[in-house]
Image (cartoon, rainbow, N blue to C red; front, side):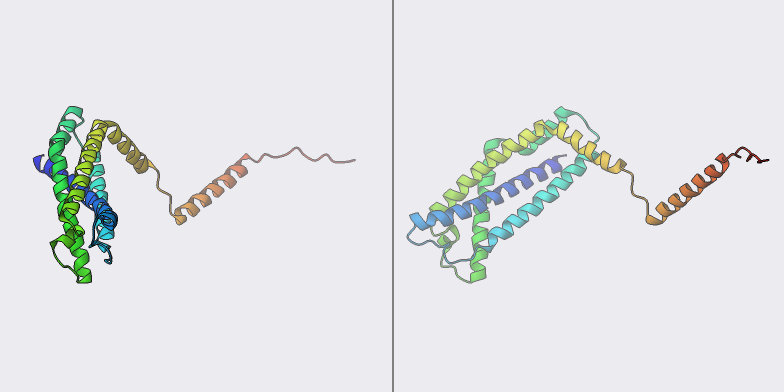
Length: 217
């Protein structure tokens, strides 16, 4: 159980920090044009943004599929135990936001390092922060903190509504599994042939002899 809680916490922090880093990267690129004499993000193709967002999308998809299967296989319907497990995984909101901010700063440096390696141009550490260490760390730290608090609140809200969501998912999958599968074409033809033959047989059995034709004198 503890390993599952730790994996959930690390996954939430990593995904939230990555999203915060992508937002901070764009904010630094825009702000650098106005507050910096030299914007290090100018003239560089930022392929890391698309790559990071794609990785986040895959991580969210995998986590969603894993969560759905966990809900379908769950044998414990105790709401207090489920909520306690989620709360233990999330931990304190301030610590969660601080961890997310740290991940956002590291992810920001990794993103710009990737972009600089592709272009082969890096003049110093300040380039990894957009031209100003203060601007880069401030933007990434603020973005990571806000995203961390938001993610913590959203996760807690989902945990509070976990039972209705679980019931909806189970009901949806139950309906899909109980839906009859379509018969193959050969079986459909055979069934149609038997139906027509039975109808002809019943019609022959239902035939009765009519009254005799009168003989004219």
